[in-house]
Image (cartoon, rainbow, N blue to C red):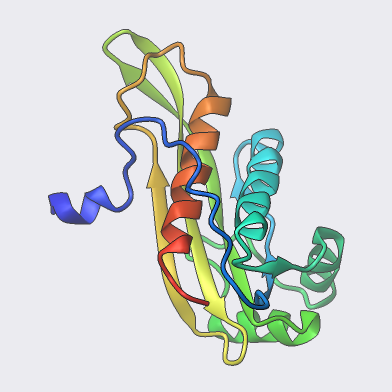
Length: 174
């Protein structure tokens, strides 16, 4: 059980992963808007994750406005608890002509610590193969176990969660 949790919990605020660029042409991907309870923070996190992955040549992302149009035009509900279905992922991948679809949730959770309340982040990222819509990975990040003071703001926790997600994605070859 502890080994399972170790993959999704960051114990100290994570710094950015090493800036090592992968060689070759990065696959084309669509990053769906987050399912969230804090749109402002989620929009910032969206940009941070996109930047982290593009700087390391992991993915080349379709512009967000095209992604949002495809979601709306195809009538896909990205706010479902367990993410989009395999057929919806394939439908979006075909519409956007991408190799991968990334989507998930990014939520602020109020956590009571020994020294007060803190706004933590619980996030997940699902990665789907564009060719068939199959879910390849579900990656989790949760800052609630982080050893940081209650004064640590949600922006720091957000950046830590994004750095953690980016590091997890870097472990796979796409």
